[in-house]
Length: 261
Image (cartoon, rainbow, N blue to C red; front, side, top):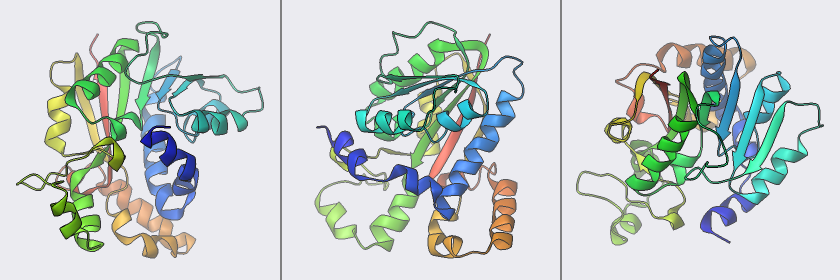
């Protein structure tokens, strides 16, 4: 088994998004998904790296026509177990780097909400983005999620006291960019890395959104909020999640692109 297979076989990704602090990322992402789906009269959705189907299954149960592609067999099994057969969804095993089994310009919304977390070279990231662009209709939307560098430096390296360990393993550049390999599971980026990755593709950025913002810095506080206070936290978060001066400090971001016609 690969590092990725082992990780997802043992980690409850579904539980993370169901926790109160995890709901912020989920609800923010769904807010923007629905915003852009509402602009298309006939929406066809592709999720590449669909995981256990937290987004794909929810959208299919809402009546959207969905194709869900997932690399990890364990995740795909969990996704399929949520379906009763009535949903307009096709679930396939596949790799974000090669979507040759899908036709050009077929989807009005293409989502990569996980693959960029686990791709470690610029070549692989560009290949995944290239495939996403290829299968999206002209004028369609591409949503790409990323894990950001600075929260790991602040929370893991300093907050959880892993500085000496990380330095001993030469996992930091001189300007404090974390260096990841497959055994670390997650690849971390900065906003300028995302912009550089988009360069050269026939896309234009619509928005870059902080999907959880400050939430993960105060998980215990968020998880113990009463419903009224949590509602106010969401109200605050939605009010500031597009502020570009705060984007890099978010654990997760969502890059929303439009494919040029």
